[in-house]
Amino acid sequence: MIVGVIGLVLVGHFVLWRELIPAVGVVVAPVPVVSTVVGWLFAGAAFGVVGVLLINQRSARPEVLSRLRWTAGIWSLVALMCVPTGAADEVVLPVDFWAGVFAGAYGVVMSPVAAIVVGLVWSLVLKLRPGEPTGRAVGWAFVGYSALLLVWGSTLLRM
Image (cartoon, rainbow, N blue to C red):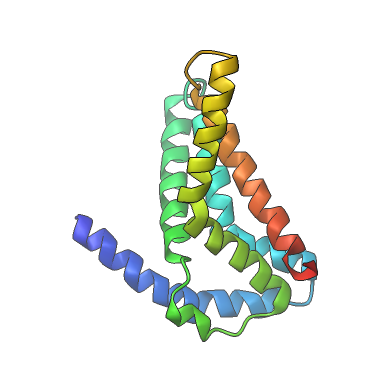
């Protein structure tokens, strides 16, 4: 099963970058703001979905929690498919759409570094206020990272 999922992610990566992402870019290109947000949705919003799952882990009904888990899992696989490789370098995208896709995709690549930074900040906070971080706090960190990626995508072209 694991080999099958890895194969699906690899095939999905090439289909996503060669077919789906350019086709969506053509559709949303006329409206720059929408174009950036839609580009960000592929990978950047996956962090927000995982955050919503963690925030609602204890309070959601079991059927809602099940749907959130499936949504977070599938969206996370799509985010992994968005990790840029050499195949992504050849894809021509509208500029605003590219900024959103770039921010989300590189947000996935940089997530281990972001996790280390958050961990270090968290350790400083825990020295001031002892106690374990709750799932809600971690969920809000994911939502914040997702929002940060959207802001980065919208300002990327102005840097």
